[in-house]
Length: 74
Image 1 (spheres, rainbow, N blue to C red):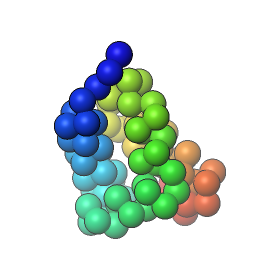
Image 2: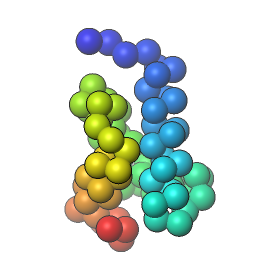
Image 3: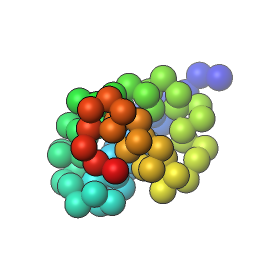
């Protein structure tokens, strides 16, 4: 199923905001962290699954994914 770029962008933006809140980061810091450690690419590739999960669940899962890629947040 195809998803519009607008839908994906909106979800990623809200996700980055919630991720940042969870870890005490600004939106810019959260987005940079997620970009650097592959979180944004993962969400883009697996958007069909990611957007159906709760933000809390995805924050935990993506934090673990980024940690395996060298990130320090858990």
